[in-house]
Length: 127
Image 1 (cartoon, rainbow, N blue to C red):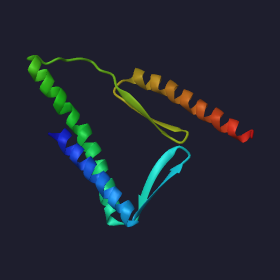
Image 2 (tube, one colour):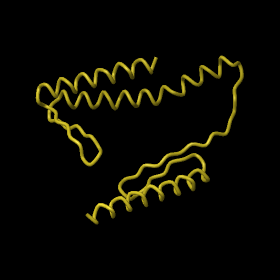
Image 3 (cartoon, rainbow, N blue to C red):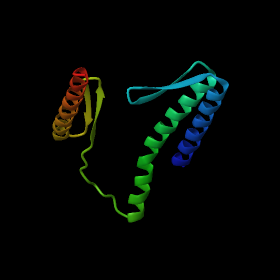
Image 4 (tube, rainbow, N blue to C red):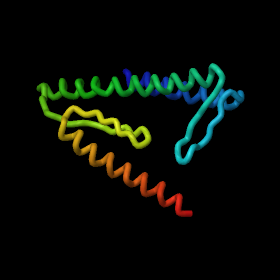
């Protein structure tokens, strides 16, 4: 059920953003390789809020789907899963994980990404 609601909210958000572009309330651009949207009207605000709300509902509805699959199997499976992620805010990495060994692996990956970005930026200054 949450998946259909999130899809509906996402589509409504996109429709509101398109209407705000047509009305002239919103603008879009690209900074380096990152696209962005900004606006000053209520339609653009409502569209962006609906899109973020749809993403949140979708993420929170994923465990419900897996709970139903486990009930169909007729047994509760207890597994030890490791998960984590990195958020790079400029050169500052933010790690989140449920296992300390995963944080170490993510740290190495973050260092590699930061070094790639530094090498790329230094190659741009040679022109």
